[in-house]
Image (cartoon, rainbow, N blue to C red; front, side):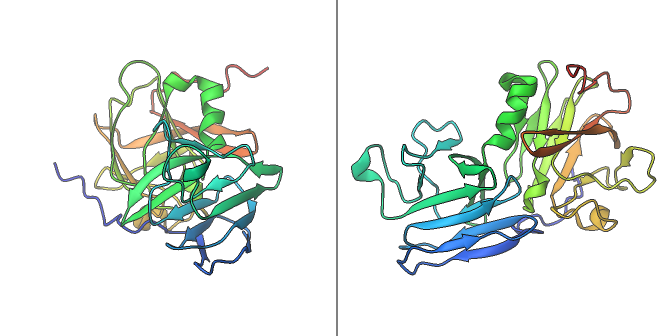
Length: 267
């Protein structure tokens, strides 16, 4: 079936870019406002610091960062730095360069893998996903990658995270079995052209998601956060509200006949 997807092959869409150069010196790179993608060059970049890093920022590399247990989460070492060139376990395989990632509330010590696109590998703060694990249960939370994914929501109530506040294009995704008990969760609000808390899809029945600066009226025609096709005849999503967890804003969406109250556990 032709889903009518546009070209979603460019990784960085609405994030600004900081190029981490291979100069072999120890530098400090400071993120500005909004989403920032720290793009690490191949080669010896030195022992650098990324400062003012937030949940909306990402790390982009030209080679995959070593993940010892392949669970998609990369914890920094006891010294609190990321061994970006690590090629195995143990101190002798730490590699040449170490990166310290400093957030507004302290050091970031764990990132999550978001997949690969166009020869680049994407990472972001692990807390954005772990917050939802704590809220809804790890077994119930799903996240795609920056590539084109087919995601199943079968097997009970599920939560699908779409971290579009990163300012990355999250690809052309197909979501199957999205039911009335499921949630679609974004980190940048989706554009609602009528203001009636219902996000309607285009004529191709595909959701064009907002980017880091969303919602914008141009989102339905540009889809800077990527595109999502929901099978089963779904042509719109109901906006259910927003919640801040651990400093991250989450926007909740369900079907027109949703049975979910994402705030049921709140006092």
